[in-house]
Length: 317
Image (cartoon, rainbow, N blue to C red; front, top):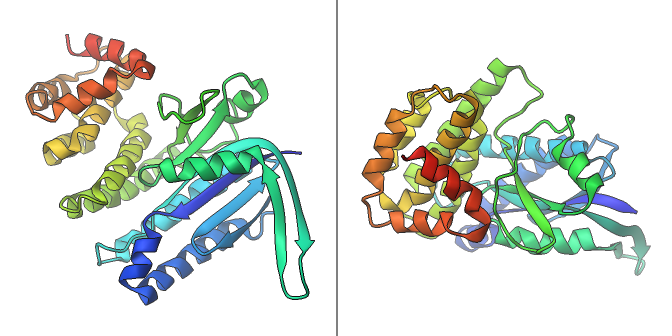
C-alpha cells in the first residue's frame, strides 16, 4: 500500500554524545517529549523512534507534513535555553511517497521487530544525510500527478512548500522545502509573530556559531528557510528584518544568504513590480565585489537554476 513516509534525525547528535553523554541524553529526551506530544494521539500517524531517529508514516499527506513542521518549530524553540554552542536541537529529514509493506514480526520471546520495506523508506533514509541544516525536504515524483496534487496543491498542508528548491538526488524526482517556520493554520498576525520569534533564534544561532566551520553551513541553511518563510510578509527592500540581515551578514562566508536575499527580492518583485528594492540593489553592488561572490555565480550557473539566472539578470539591470 502506498504511504507517505518521513525519516527524521537530530543534526550532529553523534558528536554531541561524544562530547557529553548526559547532556546529549537530556536533549534527546526533550526531542522525544516533543515528538510524542505531537504524534502520539493522532491515529492517522504511525511509526517508531530509536535513538535520535524518528520514522513516521501515514495515508494522509497533510497530517504527516503538518505534524513534522510542528515538531520542527517546537524543537527549534528549545534552542533558546541552550547556552553551550556545542549542543542544539535541530531536526532534519526527508519525506517520500511509495509502496510500503509494513507489519510487526515476532523474532523471539524477548525481541520484536517492525517489518518495513519499500521505496519510500529507501528514498527518505538515503536522502536525509544529504540535507544541510534544519530542513524538511519533500520528494515529488516528476510524473506522478497524484503526488503533485496531494503535495503541491493540498490546501490542508499548513506550511508553504518552496518549489524553487534545486536539491538533486534521484533524477525522476524533484524536491521542495517545507518552510516550517510558517504555520498557515494561524492568523496572519500570529504567523508573523511566530516566524519572527523563530527567525530571531536562527539569526542568533548563525551569529554565535560564525567561527565554527563544522556547523555554520547548517545554521546558514536553517536561516535561509526562516527568511524564505518570512518573505510573505516582506513588501519592499526597506523591511526591518531584511535590512538587519543585510547589515549583519556581509562577510563572505554568508554568500548563500546573499543569494537568498536577492532571491526573495526577485520573488516579491514579481508580485509587486512598483516596490522599492533600491536597498537590496545597493547590497548587491557591495557584496558582488567580494571574493566569495564567485560562489553565487557558480550556484546560479547550475543548469537547474536557469530560471534564477534569468530573473537575476533582470533584477540587477
